[in-house]
Image (cartoon, rainbow, N blue to C red):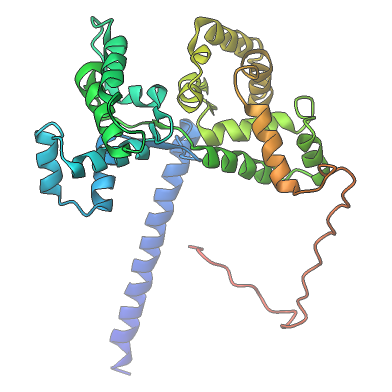
Length: 327
């Protein structure tokens, strides 16, 4: 009997500590939920925000470059060396601001520089520098072309900023974003067939689908509304940032302030954005991928059979399922 008392005491203390630990974890989770309910949380969804220094360090890891070496290159203002050219080419690709076929995506890369307000010629000066620097380089000199372009921006466009910026989706990522949103909405095959044939705008499920796409992509938020800057960074159409487009979105949003977010966004799209964005085309293409190669684009396809019920005959019917994560 004497040997059991310490064991029982130890077991009791262990149970107390475990209970306290579980209560602490639960308190943290509850506090997070309360904070989310008071202020809408900035969830990542399908979005990426990244800074130039972060992208640079990631590329340095790809090339197994020591931190001290990278720091020296930065302190030397990125010297004209092959490994530095490779590093900057990687960084610009990493930020979705460079394409080996078309070159710089100015509408993306400009976000990583801050011109001074008094400088009204930075854009023309930078473009002239890029044109002059690339005229004697072969088209397949990707590292050199990216490096020379970066140096022009670095010298002429503005100060390099270190804050995170919105990173647009590449073409395949954008397709995946829309296709996954279609799957998330659990749309019937008959609806996918309508989308596949272009019957989209007036289809009843489309407003909810559009909201899912735009929230996941960072183009709309429940607390901030339409995010034209992010849409511009994705597409590069200057019309997205014109006063007319902004005023249109604000006016439609205000007139539908009592409606759901899905309806409000749908109306903004119809009246202000669909003519300058490929939203409808992307939905149609994604539906085609989900439907498959049916020549009628899904028309007349037999509905999928209902899932079979689970067969639980293999185990005792009175077996109680375990319960996890209970305090």
